[in-house]
Length: 181
Image (cartoon, rainbow, N blue to C red; front, side, top):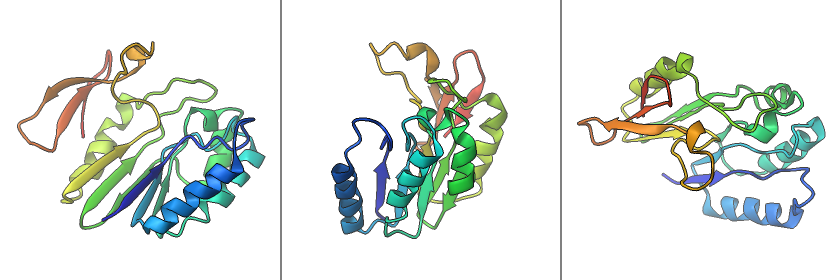
């Protein structure tokens, strides 16, 4: 099982370099992955023409299973509507015999920070519980764990404890309840 990951391509950004994106697409295709995960920030400002450019690139991936979720840049300027029009649901689940991938939209329209929200914890847990896959991957755009010294420590999830199961960790959202992954 080969999984490729790409993120923060920022189509429409002044510093976007089409040649680098071409190279990334070619390198991913050369690897012949079973699944490609794109974890957000496809666009600079969430505008439709930026989404169309991003979709044109991602459509060139030679992979039957491509998982795409939005990032904070994609949810600007009603970009979440364009995302749904071009890519479908902002939450996706992929399952096969080896892996379960649960990818969720952690964005909030027109804001840089994001969250998962307690209301989705049970749904996330159910998606993983429905599979006996060896590998479980949880995908979101925003940091799940804090990165020291970045100023984002307050907006991130932090470990609450580790269960006795070697493949399950429990996290507590700041001021919230627990989620297992």
